[in-house]
Image (tube, rainbow, N blue to C red; front, side, top):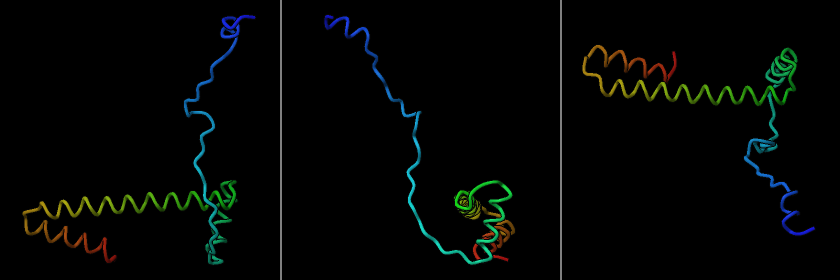
Length: 103
């Protein structure tokens, strides 16, 4: 067998990143209040997930929620800065106060 026939029978593999890519994980130990742990286990059972997977989903949802709230605040702050009508300024200021201090 010559080198040219060897080259024709070989296959080149190319990895495009689509196969077998998983996000790296970090093991993290946390303590939960009994009531929270009970709720997590009940939610996980109803969705047929492990408690760990349920915690991951809850945390991811909470992070997304916080990002949305922050973006809403920045949008409201921008509208407040650009407002010129005194009534609108007061209303937007009240809205910002409620976002920051609640109630």
